[in-house]
Image 1 (cartoon, rainbow, N blue to C red):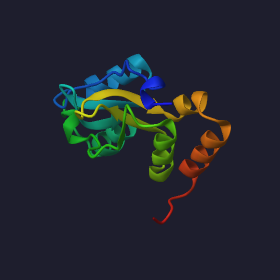
Image 2: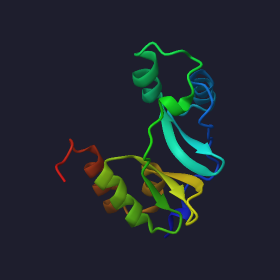
Image 3: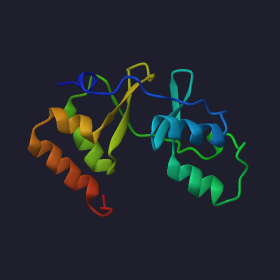
Image 4: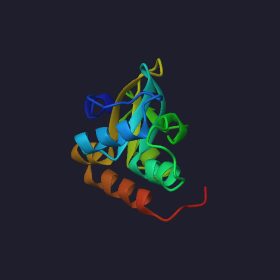
Length: 140
């Protein structure tokens, strides 16, 4: 089964120039802790509630700070035509619970979360993936 069959397609995104206050309000509105930052359809990064707290609030930055200044760049992703097991392996390797999903033209087309994998994959794959994601930092 391919990632495109299980991923969430309706993904809220924000622009790099939006303020951290606007992004925090959007997170509260949609009850999300992470939002992709896109310049058009191109993924530039993600911003998490933790990014806002650690990189903005704790440093006393203005609420008008552009999200591009606090977002996480170099976002990990998979492709929409990847197999579920490939994405599960990638999540385990990176110790993350969600991946951005791109098409082969590098445009954001969705998000796949561990829960999406859990609903479709065999229990063994999900259990193993969760176990590996939850391990303390492993030496590569």
